[in-house]
Image (cartoon, rainbow, N blue to C red; front, side, top):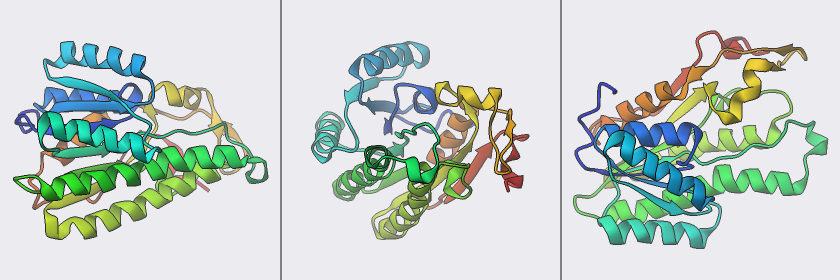
Length: 258
């Protein structure tokens, strides 16, 4: 349990992409910290299973609401559900995202480009937009938004133009959200994750392409460490904010890429 485990105080949190991987780990840590947690994702079977397991593991109230965050109508339904059930939202974790197999830029299909932009960037914007509407109108006013940026928000891997472009854009969205939220007690920060061990990163330990064209295995860390960092960010009073934080495997080659 994290050091901030007593600071949730029954607050309401939404974790997109919360049914598996890093999102599930974050939802678990928030539930253990006292938050009531809503998890969203595209697969209702995965969400329902995760919600039941997380409720048992943490004793927290965990609600599964299926939603494609790239669909404005689905996002509106998601936030309407939260507003109707709880009357407020204290924390949004924009975690949902996808990637496709790394290919040279000229081989990226338009369909793959659109899919990545929709899930990684448009989805974060649409959820942020709806969160602003709710957080501005609720009483007490305000809340916190935490975006999953990835270390690719600053430094790319080879052949990852669509993913890298969306993660760089998340940094801009984080800064704009932090600025535009100031007058309404809405804080926004970003966590850049390096090699958390999940189903999405199974190839990393086996070997991934480096900037010099070689393949190399990379160190990973338990996703629980990422979740603990998110709980810390979420535990701060709204007058304080972690604008950016990088949590990564100590021995990954990120700092020396290139």
